[in-house]
Image 1 (cartoon, rainbow, N blue to C red):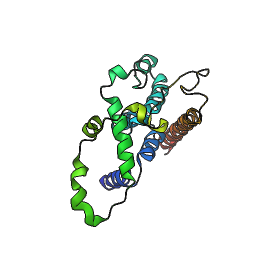
Image 2 (cartoon, rainbow, N blue to C red):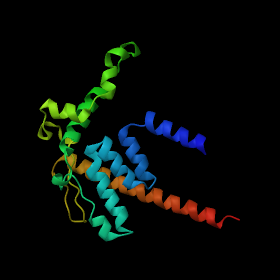
Image 3 (cartoon, rainbow, N blue to C red):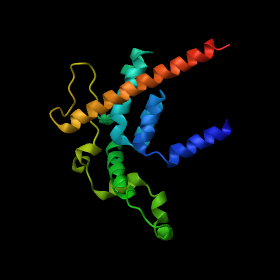
Image 4 (tube, rainbow, N blue to C red):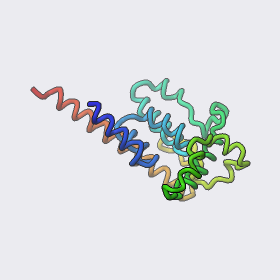
Length: 186
């Protein structure tokens, strides 16, 4: 078992990009972990993950689901969340740069840098970020429109959230079917 756990962790941390990690967590029914992972590593995805978590938790405890707060709707509850968004955007800009291994010693200091402090000192604002780097407050209910309805970004995010919710439901159904099959096996 330890061998497979080690392989999974290696795959999860080195091969998958952040959005693929979130997708994997959601598909395997780990929406709370996906929300916390997004809060730490991908703040622009937090609203979507919290919405999925609320949908999942509503099936178990509706009152607990109502108590989950979305940083886009309640920024006063999430200190420096805007700095996390700026840091995520700045890190994504530099992450795409491929540096030769020979330049490691020149860039090794940036591997341990404090991204939040860099964002704080950069003077950047959340309003300076492209729309794709800012979270859209989640809207619940069949008649609720996306926060920026009328734009392609809002429609794309709504479609992405619906696809993620469907994938999560399919994964949960598959997991339950597998569990039922194991229980019925002689």
